[in-house]
Length: 413
Ligand SMILES: Cc1ncc(COP(=O)(O)O)c(C=O)c1O
Image (cartoon, rainbow, N blue to C red):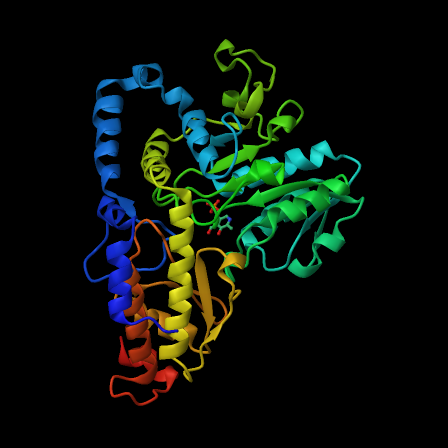
């Protein structure tokens, strides 16, 4: 049943996470439904960056590598992210971008299965991940093959030729969520490994890498983790692989003794071997603020709120915008999707631009999708009401007459 504004106001009042919104800078008059793309700015980030820049860098200068433990930042913040994704301390580091980490772990996985040529993924995976796999394939001079199978056929496509199954846990477009434990079990039964992209999962849905027995994972720092634009990413290597997996980027900070400055590379023991060059201290400092905020909340409360927000949004859109050519293109069951939803509409681009002009920020995904993300730390239930009210106005026209969607862009510019 469709919720009323009063119902949503009551949900906001009863929301155990409601106080957290104040921890973020959110402009007045904006309904931000794009935290799955770029998370909001935590208030504390500014003060933290000020401290790191002025005190640690400005006054401490190079002494801060030890005095403020800059040198251990990738492992320290990695251990914190580990708690969000069901990994153990020492299994995650913060470093590089998601793309670079993906390349490193994909190469490492292929080298652990040298007699198997296939990287298995799905069409419609985040294209970047397929591009990275194609780059590795092309570097492999014909020894590596990229095979794509639709989501429903992934499990049956795992065979003795597959080295690694590369999947994004929550699809960036549809939000459809893979069953990580089931696919990983199937991969292992055939001797293959798994590499999960958690960019749309961490902080938004339940992720338990070690319960699922996952082998490798990567993820973004700037989405639900609120680390800021271009925040450093993270990577996970299950402890059982850490002695044998090696990074193809054998940089000095992944060396066993970087400050011995010897000529030959020797990988560090443990997860640190997946570091390459000098890490971005300012970026990690900002990310740590976002991660700390997330860690201060109960994961079940976050999960429940995410599901409720997306479920209520779908119900509101479908009842208030009925007959306006919108079609849900995400799984209907919130247990089968992440914390965003997409609607198909033939004028998606124009409608989304008009929504953004009216202060409702989601995003457009080619060719005809409008994507709306729900961040449990700062989205309110009443945000849904405002977003759907404006969407309804745009689609129907303020007089209540159905409006030609092709006019929407022009009339709102
Ligand atoms: C699933 C997924 N993987 C990776 C990335 C981005 O990787 P990078 O931070 O290297 O640009 C994104 C960005 O939206 C993404 O959605």
